[in-house]
Length: 394
Ligand code: PMP
Image (tube, rainbow, N blue to C red):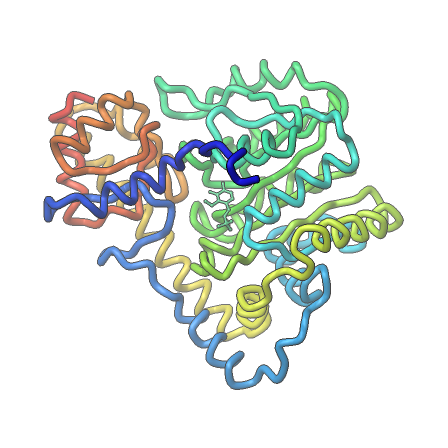
């Protein structure tokens, strides 16, 4: 049987991690991997997470299964965190999933169950797992223009013009905040226009929100998601707790499906539970319980929010420092986009050859499409990167 298998395409980011590990230059800089790192290069366990785990170890009396949909308390706190009071609670079906990836997978399977022929529209570029899962599920896929390689902002005209090609029932995947891999985001007003076209075409939104709290703040980063959620009868939202709680390996995420009314919510909830059961039975619990503990306890929640703010402001300061340094070195404002981008990533917008040059000549590692993890920098390495960018002639 196994002789029938052929090799799968190599994961570029994993290959980059291996290359970086093997790199011997002591001043090497890793801007590749997609996890938050503090100034010392560590991915810390957040204070509130440690405390919540301490309490769980002390107080948990059973490890029996949670329900197929996960702990309802987790759904409650997450619906509140992501949606606030933007839609009636009775319209929201939700299941816990293994990370944001699990939520995306379950969302796409739900689309396949409900509308087998629907085309799923993705931004070009997007997080590579999006097209990969869609292809694996044998679903129809299309792309809308997103990134303007001149301005390194959103190609809004291109995007709007491509969305004119939507058919009724098509699904449009939108990043809730902090677009990965570009860092370029639609404004609230632009998203309102996108919503207008989607409503006209009777398309269905699917929001992937994996970095709430990494851009402009917890509530601010949810604004666009909430606007989308209240503008349609149906909406899918995949949320990840990996980044904003720093619990990457605990696999904590949630899929929310907003239904037209309470009746539709009931059948949707049943279908979500069915899909969980087919794929992994009940979802992982530890991370979800940590998140619930933090969000339900005012002191833990305040401490988590404070640490998340420190993290967010640290990344903003690095962005500003890098933009300032490049302004000084080039006497131009053509790198100001780095300060305007939001989230952990920025696409520098250069060629694979230049990316390779930065690696070969300066020991600076970024993904081939020139995505940089801003959190891979610190105050000392920013000037080194800026000089390398200028020296390479980017
Ligand atoms: N969506 C996007 C855009 C992401 O960047 C990521 C993580 N890289 C995820 C979803 C999923 O994250 P996880 O499965 O680790 O929760």
